[in-house]
Image 1: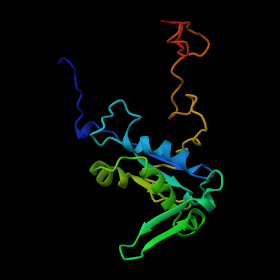
Image 2: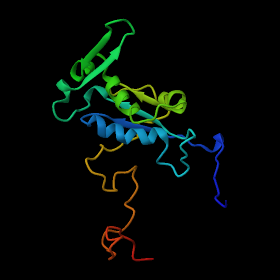
Image 3: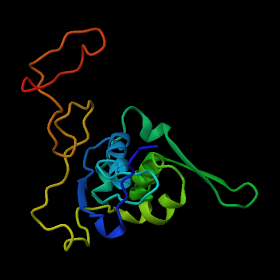
Image 4: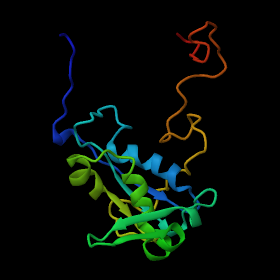
Length: 185
């Protein structure tokens, strides 16, 4: 087997801090933007069995948005452990009592339930109800929050990266009809 596996020791991992403003953002779209950052999938050194994700600070958690009638129709259920102890609360009641719980449940629901998640990934997620957070040393005042999660990924809003190719040069063919390449090749 002549596959080369690159391994990075813990000293080579660089963790960055991301600030996200949750004002008027849809819960599921925001969660699908945050989960890969926590896991480290945006890095070229990503491996599913290692911990290389970044820190995420979410502010204004009480101002999130649900689409449709989910404020009334979506229920959060849990059990106390006692007979007849099934409790449930709809989303509008939950945002009044624990605004950060809605986002935390949505984001952690997109991550697999492993020891890596419980011990390493969950502590790197910091959610705050208002606009203030205690991480000003890691996130200076000039840090801009990430853009609002889009309804459609078009390549311009994926962590500030550009699109993979120039859309003005088409390639004909049955298999690669949707792919676009630069004319410099």
